[in-house]
Image (cartoon, rainbow, N blue to C red; front, side, top):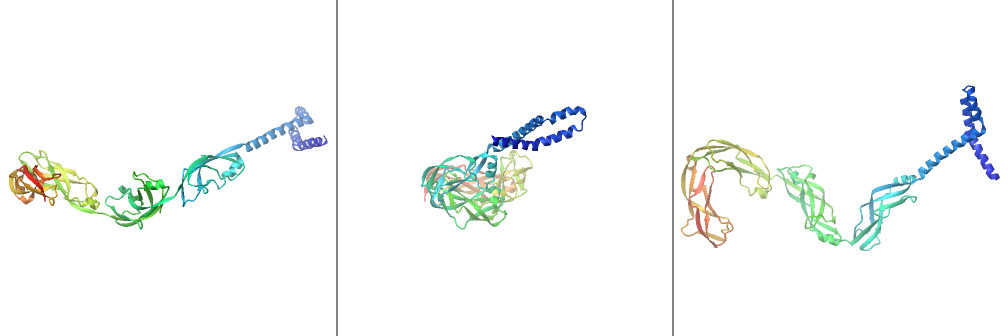
Length: 448
């Protein structure tokens, strides 16, 4: 009881010194400024019991405020750390691990002070040690490497099923492939690419290594610093492994990147523009002249296409043409040609009175058959020459000879035997109409 009495005495002295005396002084100072009507309030406030109850009321309010702040500060809270990397420890030279997530989310639970300290930690990773496991399937618990023991944590996902495979390797020949080739200047072409060593090693699980059909270095045109004729080196070209269907296979490639030497050129060829009239001009007329704004064009493309192109044909419709006419014609790019020096021309056609003549002894040639293996001979009175009627303006056809006309039969797909086939003719001058007077001939095909 003595101890309790002394405790209450100390509490009273504390409140008297901290609250009662300061409040009393404040009240006296305030009431001293009023008239006698305030003396009743002064007498009431000067009573010991009144001041005691006021002091207790204020003490209770202060206690509640402080208590609530402490409770609020000590309440549990939660923080989510998203996409934390998963670090796996195992013998990478001998094994391949599949099934582990790349990242996980970790929820931290604790008071705000501990959470704040935990979030400032530099260590935020989920580490898994598989070094003691053998090849096969295993269920692994994912654990967070926490920096504070005063907080709880939950990992999502918390469990992973992994499969450990023995690592195997295989040699492959590297091939080079071009990406974004359409971004290369139309007049340029990449005609040569090479690497110092085209041998690479693929490593991974046995079933994945067996899926690999090809390994490619993906040379991106965007990586070229300058698009100009000459040689260039593209650094750190990534390598990809593909299966037979063109799908990427997840294997390790050694090396994973290579430097590719690229040779850029601009193959081109100048060829004539050949105007081909289509249709028949008005009766009694023929084409007297064809004038072109351009007679030649330079074409750009790979050599394999350029070698097969001898001219650029342009068709104009002259059906029922009665007088001079001018055509605006667009040039069509042949297959494999990326660019042309000009894209359109103007063609002026003039007509005049027509006439015709017959030109005899035009030799009939055989096309579409290998004459080193087969022989072609006319039979049943057919001839190896034909007479051709040419129609046009007199000043034009007077200059035409048998050597200017090409007559032929198309034997594509024919085998040894006897056949009746059509005779076709064409000439060097597009202003003239050529018609074979003998429409068909009988021939025999024999093996040499």
